[in-house]
Length: 299
Image (cartoon, rainbow, N blue to C red; front, side, top):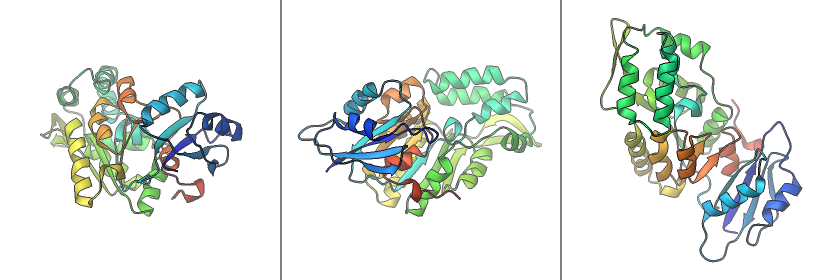
């Protein structure tokens, strides 16, 4: 067998059952017996295509077969399935919020900033220009508010900690790469367990944000360059890498990764990514790599 289809459903509902596995397997060339990664939740179906084959086209066709079922699926070669380098976006990916929107709430401008953020993540605005404009609205805000935001408003995305710690246990290198700010990434990376983090630096004067960000801004190209840099440093090939994000500034690294994943992403990002998580949490990316539930590192 050269390829594998992985189905991942919600942990709260055992809807990935033998009947569903058989139904999807019927659309695969030369399928083998299912391999259960977590009963009722995740299953692998190895198969062997003959001749030219497009993973994405098959994945799209299988999603149509699933209809409204809240099941994510991944179609990929078995070779290099377990990745050795993992890059992740932070805002709305590793955490459930956009940090700059939460900061803006303290100056009464959350709605205004959130609208700009949303348009930027959809690819309607240039990221660097947008970030400068949003940061300017924070001028004069006490930098101490970051601690309050992290303590009271930031939540980790389910499955993220298990994903990072399990991959690291098995030898992967992990990096949190954000268009957000080091004041947040340094703490989030430590909580989750990343090897390193990279982000933008908010400039502070007299204990308050100056309304400026250090240049050059870490955006779409910097995320791409980080992936290329770390891949070369670790001596890896493209297929040994994985990247996940939700917005337009993640697209370059998603497209460059061996497994590029759009996570509950904006439409343009989901359409461009080779893989997608539309329903589940980040633990789906462990099942996609063939890890069983019993392999997960939870602490």
